[in-house]
Image (cartoon, rainbow, N blue to C red; front, side, top):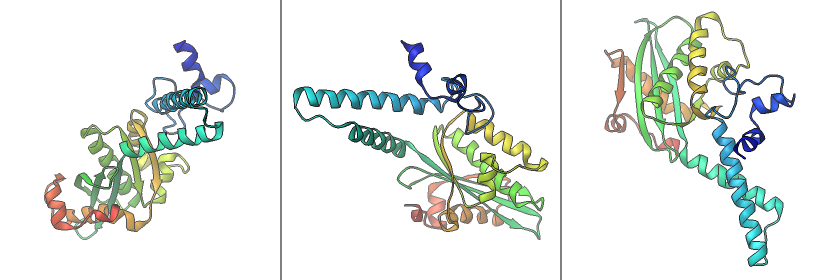
Length: 241
């Protein structure tokens, strides 16, 4: 029974056996094949479980209360339940950079918040400026993912105001040699975690991360984790809500 269930899950590995996609590799990380052991496969299994429960509920209503739910309404209910659960579990990662060319360094800022927009953690780092803003942006994102891992976060939504960074991670544009290892590390970390989404946001919605990055201008240490109280003194993060 379990083998039959696993074979019905729409993983790229199962679909590739039916000659549907061109590759069995995961469509998000593009590194390894997506099978039932992948973290992303849990999303498909959850969808199957919610669908089975919804069909059972609809059938029970039709049998015992004479008011069954039609098929379309059942599917709409399934999508709503799955999305509501995911939204409640998601954490959001925003990262940004600021440059100080006179001193030759770039500041990296990271902010993580929960699904209600409330502050969870932040960090700032200083790196040597290599005259490549994409290198700095991807480095900030890598630091943010490491921070999320240290916090034990499983469902993570990455938000960035850099179209180039989003395109690099998703593989829509080819990265150059200098940042290839950073992109590879990001994809490897993403592949081993239940990443919810990587999406572009307007500059305004990333301003808190930018303010965090600017705090490196007065920072002597190379990398520091920030506490809630310190952030409240610097700025309000309620614009996320």
